[in-house]
Figure 1 (cartoon, helix red, strand yellow):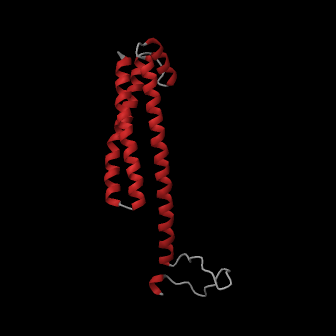
Figure 2 (figure 1 turned 180 degrees about the horizontal axis):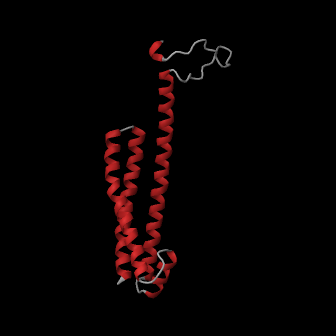
Figure 3 (figure 1 turned 180 degrees about the vertical axis):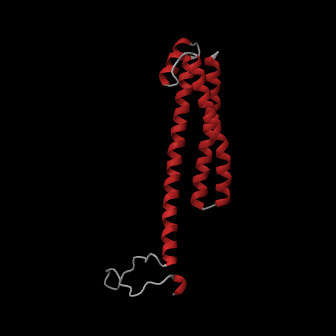
Length: 155
């Protein structure tokens, strides 16, 4: 009974993780294009998928614990050893883990792009506000000395 329910959850979550990975890839595209309305839409689409993955993860843990097993890879292995669906359970578990790893890597890539964009925007804002001076060079190639730094709005 628990093995069939677990297999169904794994199968469902594989489809959900594939959708999530596609959304994360689309999010990267929207970030590179600075398409904020599309980015907002993609973020709203991701939330229910993440909630569903969390819910199913909790359900898988509960099912393993109800069977008297630990809610980890060892518990799943023990259940798989007693089940006729054992090979499928382990294969689906590995497939889901690989997909979730790909989602995590893609999400980290998006995070790096966001941080780079934030740094760039922060630097430009600092220049516009007069708090930072861009690195300027004189005719000899050394750092230029600017006598008075004024915000661009006062230049």
